[in-house]
Image (cartoon, rainbow, N blue to C red):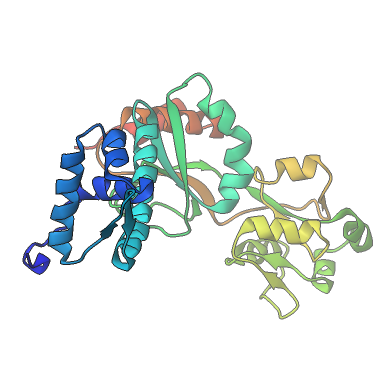
Amino acid sequence: MNHISQPLLPLDTLRAFEAAARTGSFSSAADALNVTHGAVSRQIAKLERWLGQRLFDRQARGVGLTPEGRRLFLRTTEALALIADSSDRWIEAKGSAVVRLASLPSVSGLWLMPRLRALEAGDPDLRVELIIDHRESNLADDGIDLALRCGRGGIPKRNSIQLFEERCFPVAEPELAAKIGKGRPERLLAYPLIHDSDASGWRAWFGAQGLDYRPRHQDRRFEDYNLVLDAAMHGLGIALARPPLVQDVLAQGRVVAVDDRTVLNPVAYWLDRPEGDLRPAAAAFAKRIMQAAGVGESAARDFLATVR
């Protein structure tokens, strides 16, 4: 039989093939699959006809794989392992209230993680699946229930609520901070300034002090605020503290304030959800996030309400 005329491999034969190849015996494969020796033999014959290749050499004691059989066994083993791994993940999700939450690395590590155990407390079925992503994709298309982000306002095709703003101030590693000392704000320009992909925070801070700031070659730019903070903790320059992301680092004394003047960050932190209905588990988790961020009950109800 020419297998090209059939679009799909007869998958019911692969388990019999894999068992026979693994055990080296049709009888042992039959015992493992709880079928008869003849059933295994027929399945193997069916597979060989479909492929147009001989897969086994019949030997005095059992069977051995031909070169074609060895190649197919390797691929079959990999494919079945992949299916089993996927099945394990699907089974794990059954019976659980799974919430898929997209977030930036910095927001996840510095704000969400210190609160996650408390947010999950009291709901043994809840399982938060965290998706780390910088994109502003269509949440519904990607199967995402909620998103934590940093930005300047709402995004089309999402319902958004502002969680909190932040008043930023310059910080540095303690030894560098002692060297910088106190004084006029322009003294900070003698040192490398650290920012993420958006330098608007530094522009706003210097602008509030009557100074114009533009990124310079000695300044350091990192894509994510986690790295900005790490660079400051290692003495590579001055960063802007962004409460409440830096609460733990400040409390530990790993960075300290080098200037008490603050400015409202032009960007804020938001919780987003797709338009339309929100699954009960996601709605309950969103409510807990908003409570942790200090969002009022009325605003939280409006965010969770479905507009029709």
